[in-house]
Amino acid sequence: MSSTWRQGCPVPLSALSYLRISYRGFDGRYHVGEMVVATKTAKQVISVFHLLFDQGYPVRRMALVDDFGGNDDASMAADNTSGFNCRQITGGTGFSQHSYGQAIDLDPVENPYVGGGQVLPPAGSAFLGRPDSAGVIHHGDATVAAFASIGWSWGGDWSSPHDFQHFSANGR
Image (cartoon, rainbow, N blue to C red; front, side):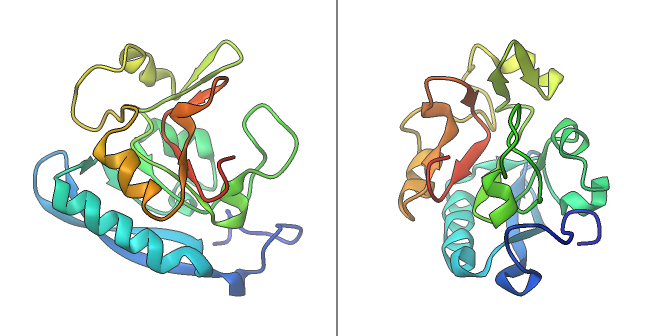
């Protein structure tokens, strides 16, 4: 957590939990990834990933953002599914919900952030038309329903920006 948590973050390290989560990869095989989330949401997050595994939803990669030096852009470019990272809101100055451990970005290349004239990660441009492809999340699909089952909202339902990779406990 040396590059994703620092003094001044809105939650203490003691309020975060390290998870090892089983997921089905794009190769169809079983993998185990790592994620940090708020302790108060850890059991719910695990239940969502159990649902996604059972549904066959593919995850490209699941590693700590620390593996990318805390760099959110590098994590997204690697198509990394992640949780906690103490950082600002994209294009803003306040803390992102990731800074509280209450947001997850899922398969960022297939589900890019689109706003302010930019697509993040840039490779996500290939998925702007929201094709019916592996890992692409659509309004009302089983992936959105899995997160909704724990009360989390999807950034793909926002009017602007569209953050197709983003799920959060408070809808922000």
